[in-house]
Image (cartoon, rainbow, N blue to C red; front, side, top):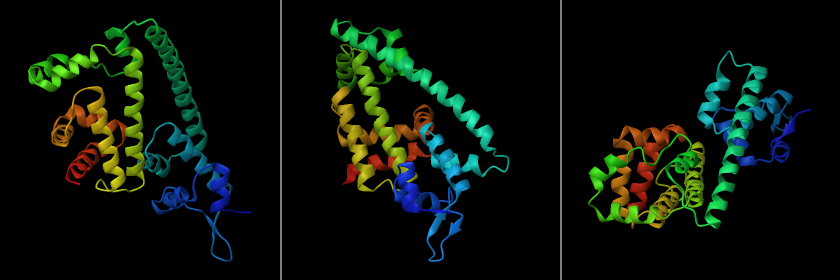
Length: 250
């Protein structure tokens, strides 16, 4: 016997709105209808929903999930085995991060600042010092660069871990808005853009809305910045650029 949207939402701990959205974008549609015309999910639908939720937990965008699951060669057992491998890798990474944070806490309590090797460890594949020479050449004489250098010099590993967590929250929130089809000039997107501006203001240097617009232009002009956002969600660099400009205008 099929399950209603409400029943499935409660079972999977997601919202009815989310299930409706999955249906609207063609990601997961209920296979049955009741005599009264209500949408009903059968066991195969629930198995597919489980796949969607596994992929979401792994950080896949809805577009990526739809592409994978629409492949004629998609095999659920193979997908589960692949998901298990990715989850194991994620678990190992999280365990490593927990150890790094524990070391950061210990260092912060003892007043020990992190060196570059520790900074690289916290950020994974991203080394904040990689473009230091270029940055200094382009902006080394600016007040913003001097202020950023002054502040970051005293940051501990724990400080960078907190900054990274804030950054990921903004990125995840932006990806969720994109998945839901929220336009870049929606107040919710502009609020995230403002949050990002204030984050720069808090951690690095005073960042006016005009300066933020300048950064937004760089996000789509410099392939390295673009690639960073595209890793989070396809199309995010342009979306983020547009949200920042919209926020500056309101």
